[in-house]
Length: 128
Image 1 (cartoon, helix red, strand yellow):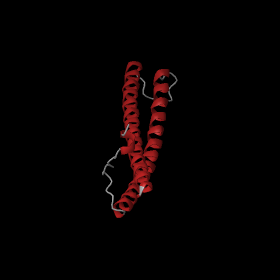
Image 2: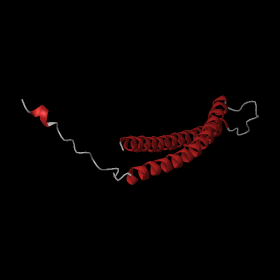
Image 3: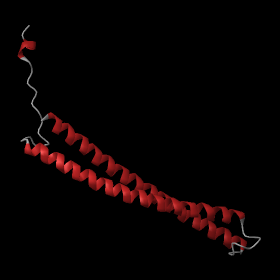
Image 4: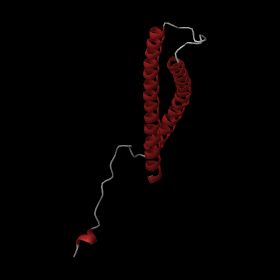
């Protein structure tokens, strides 16, 4: 019976870890999107100051070119993070299924998951 309790704990830990990873991926994607929006604003500002919006023009602002490249790199990173998130969601579903199986095994053995074991002290240790 103890092995089922340990298995449930392990599966519960794995589910919590997968959820934490999904949250981190969401935060990173949000941060990258915010940074890309800031770069867009900076690009527009530089183009407005220079009066040139054609990236092939010889006088196109160097800062705008660099910001445009950084923004494009962020979009690639966001796409990669979305792929990682999709994979993490699949892994979470699998972990949740495994947790449900482990909980079913524990239930079958007649011990509910949240039941705490009552520790009975050894009476011999109290006799002095």
